[in-house]
Structure formats: structure tokens, C-alpha cells
Image: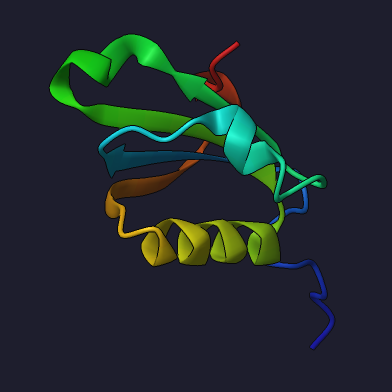
Length: 86
């Protein structure tokens, strides 16, 4: 098999929606190799939207952390280049 390119690029952008409030800066303190920032557009619905730039192991660790905190993950998606939030 000659195709050795990984399925997930180390520079993948993800968008995670969780029920409740979580501080992106606080999460960032656990994941120094990831870029995490929150989006406040859905706070009135008590939903936190996180934008994350990390590799596959980083996103798995973040999902486990959120789960361990009792957060309900509503959505996790890979964000394409054209959809990236600035």
C-alpha cells in the first residue's frame, strides 16, 4: 500500500457544540498544543460552540475531557478550509 497519508491532517479544524457553558480559555490550559476558542453566538440557547485546531489525538482527548465534565456533546464536525471561522 503506497498511500501513507494520514486520514486526519495534523492541522485539522473542528467545531464542537456542547450543551451548557464551558470556557475555551480554561480548556486551552489543558491542551497547549491545540488552539481552542469559543463562539458566543449561541449562548442564549445555553450552547457553547468551540472551534479547535488540533490533531486526531488532541480531539479525542478534548472529547474525553468534556465527557468527563458531564458535558453533553451535541455536534462534532470537521470544518473545511472555506468554512473556517476567523
